[in-house]
Every structure is written in structure tokens, then in C-alpha cells.
Length: 217
Image (tube, rainbow, N blue to C red; front, top):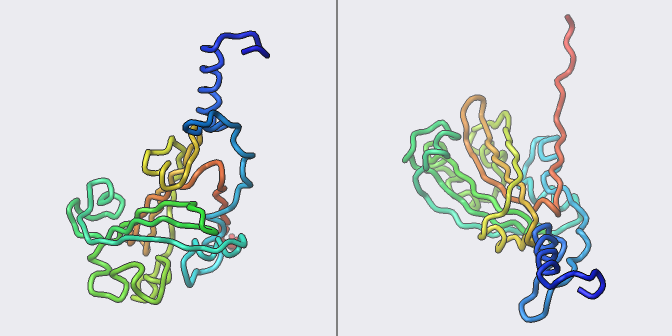
């Protein structure tokens, strides 16, 4: 107030703007502090599919970045809501295996994911429970039961984090998240779809897209 010759209300409103932009943080009983410098952005998606994976793509990308990967999860059999059924090309109410993940790199939470797999494909196989077998990662798991994934689609949007995302990822006020809708296909058959959330200020989505070789005219 003294430095800029303004009222307390103006200062309070200015601090609210800074907080909404993720530049300052409020600490209960202590005050408002300038947030630490923006952390270096890391590639957590990276070149997942430059070669056919044989394990979890998250583990592979984290290790390539010099980080130690870890994740917690909870799987349960349930039924597909309408939106998920549309993405999997099944009927709403069909049985699916839903798995909620929280991924860590060097003990820091970096990504949330909720995946759905049609039980019509996996039920009764060694991969019915996504994390219960010796093989992890959608592509190698499906390979193990003879389902060959041929391509992946992704839709990426930025939005404000929801309360549980803020809590589980430690997203500061004013920072957006990247929401990724990813679906794996075996030819025209969707075999898994997932909603993935990462904090937009910390991580970069990086892709390597193969270009088919030229053919003679």
C-alpha cells in the first residue's frame, strides 16, 4: 500500500489476480508468498510408440528422464457409462474393468489415469486384472492374449483442475491441467480407453509420429 499509494482493497484484489495465475500461494496463518520458480517441464508422454513397448510406457518414459517410476492403483469390475461405452463401441451397461491410477516420479505425483477395458475381451484371461500379472502396459498385455493393438488415438484439452485432481496432483491455484482421452485399437476394435490428467505447468506432451515410406507411383 505504501509503495504504490493504493488502498487495501486494491492490494487484496491484485493478490487475488496473482493467485489465480498461479504466481503466489497462500499459507494459512502465515501470509501470501511468491511461488517457487516454474519447474522444468518434463516429457512424461514422450516417444511411447517409436518401437513396440514390452512394459509400462510410463515406466519407460520416466526412466528415460532419469526418474524413478511408481504407481498406485485400484481395479474393480463395473458397468460402462454411456460416454465410455461410446468410446469402446459397446452398449452402455456392458461389463468393463475400471482401474484408477496415480503415477509418481521420484515420489512426486505426476499423473492420474482412469482406464476402462471391456470384460468381453479380457474376462477369464491372465490379464483380466490389469496389474495382477507379470506383464504391464496395455500393448504388451493385449499381445500376451493374442490381441494385437494397431493404433492409438488421443484427444488433448486444457482445463481447470477438479478438486480431487488438485488434491492428488498438488496443482497450485491458477494452473491448468492437460486432459488426455486415449483409446487403443486392434484394427477397428477399441480394446481400452483412458482419461489421463497431468499438470500443465510441469509436463510437456511430446510425440514421435511415424511417416509411412513413399511408394512408387
